Length: 545
Image (cartoon, rainbow, N blue to C red; front, side, top):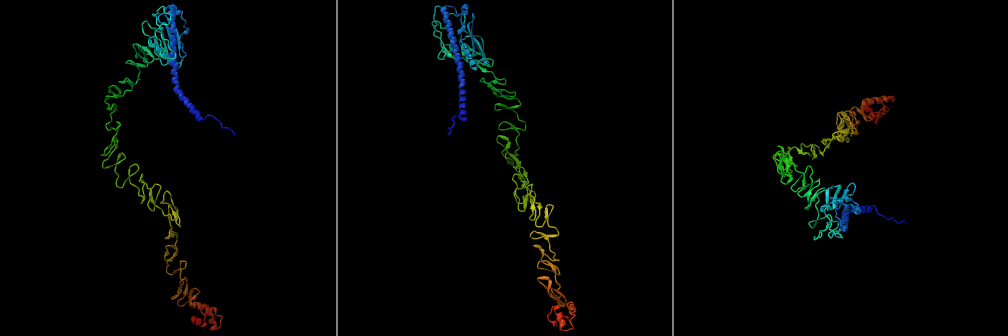
């Protein structure tokens, strides 16, 4: 069985990376500041040690500090060094032993530039700078005198001057300070930690006079001059204002208001106290005057007021109405003319005459169109209600229900309507069919193929068709079940099958047929009897005699 692999998930790795990144953001500035402070403190401490050694050696050798021959014999191998900026020592009869410090951002790190600036501020606090220092955001260069010429060490002393403070490179109390040798009967000078300096027996932090400026030697908390990017305002260096800025009463750089020929408010250039002739002073700003047909709204903008037709504007907004006159309705925030009694408003609040929906409903958003129609009507493609076409069980047009596309029940499509041709009739059941020939009588409206009555000389058979009646003579009877047949015959006629024929004709034909029988006896009349519809020869004789 394989053991599961152990390791970090991607989310765990990402969390670790995020934590390390957060720590780096916090730690890097602290570390950079530590490097700068540590380098500056170490440098000043090494400088103090070198100065102490030089002074001690001068005492032992009983030599003047600015002795040209003595300076030439010095060994500068022990001069202060720093890994963060460049430094070297020189000497001359006028300035004594000099230290020259250089740091450029393109050669040293930002930490080195900061460290060199801190060393500059230290020497400036000791009034030890020689010449004009150059301190900018990308370059620091200056010279400082370790021991000014004209000052000597008292002879006979074989140890370090009692007032010389040995700095603590670790940055503790007195670390990084350089003090002049104490004079006899004077208290030891105060030892200050960077970036503080000693002033009138106290440690003070000199003010920053911004890259090339200088503070007042009589008061390090005040500036005497400023760098090129700052203005000296009172005794402080303030960043120069932009080309379109001015200083207000608090010496802050602000963008001045445009007063269009007027004056600023006292002490605040961002506000106007008066305006030119083309503008109105609204609050503390100058706003362009409104035209003759405009007014200001609640935001002091010039707007064209709406026409409320005798009503009132809405509060704070003249472009809206709060009420209307008697001839108009308030619709939303505008006054619209009232509609006539036979009109309604559509979705755009226009007055329109609603469509006749034949008892149905019109569209509220567009009253000229119908949503539904009353009985017997339907919607066409224009949303109008039209009368439904009678297609007699056929089909209507979907877009025009008043038109047929197909007819049923025997009707014919003529154009877009179903009609029954003139050769046919329409039954009460809606069927288009040929009508029966009732010979002047009436056909059945429920079934035009059958007759109700027949004309003269015709009668209805069992199929309700008019047929010619049988001629049964005067007094004869037609068969009620079949009018083409006789059930009895009138005078002078004789029923032959289902028809009445003349008796004389029948007798004549019977005699002719029986002419082969002899005489006028019973045999002859017995032959004639069945032919004239009789069974007795005597009755046949009487009938045909």
